[in-house]
Amino acid sequence: MALPFLACTLVACASDVANRYYSAEKYPPKEPDSVVVLWAPPTRAYQVLADFQSRGESPKDMQKKAAAIGADAVIVSLLGGNYSRSEQWASEDRYSTTYTRIAATAIKFD
Image (cartoon, rainbow, N blue to C red):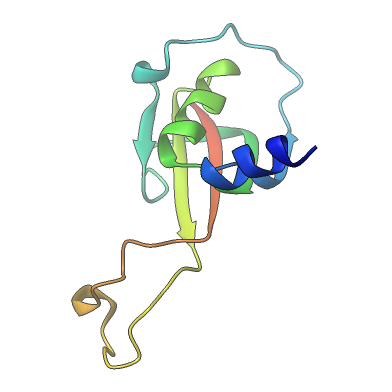
């Protein structure tokens, strides 16, 4: 009984997962590497296919989820995380690349 719990604590497990799909049209899946990972909304026109969020997943995981629904790109946001109390500017904070939650929006370009 303790083995599944122990395995989950040793390996990063996705938790608190929430996926919301908006598109009425179904698109064929794509290869994950063909889905562009963006860190800000693009300037060109697009439609939102889905939103994903979870703990314990990576931008690569969001790219795979977006590919599974045929998205052209995924806009990723890293939220929460550790920070140094002695650093006021995030760009100088040694912990600035840590995060506790990830959110992403899968999009299709017009």
